[in-house]
Image (cartoon, rainbow, N blue to C red; front, side, top):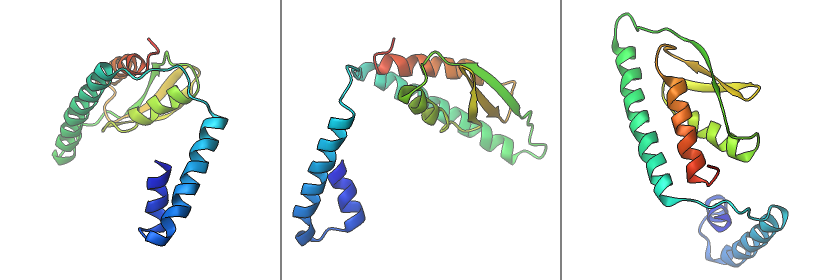
Length: 145
């Protein structure tokens, strides 16, 4: 990954490849030395289920947002909801919040204790329930449940 990043920023010059390989190797070694891998295991079946759930939800929400945008009256009931999270503060929670920010029609805007504060285009939609289901799949994918 570090080597791909090197190629992206420096170009594909043959003369630069040895320097890029050395820099990528040094970056990988430093990364592993400063943050050794944890015992977390990626579960591929759960990852597949998470991806299907996410893409299905994104498609439904995307059509909903597009339909609302094309209506004359917009049919919006914007506001904030609070969804409690079970993930502990840290990298896993941050990664989940980044994933949740990709869903059309809702946007995580901050934390309220252990609850995620989300701005929604329509607060009557089951955004909180869907987020809890997605968090469960996320935790199962990375071995936290």
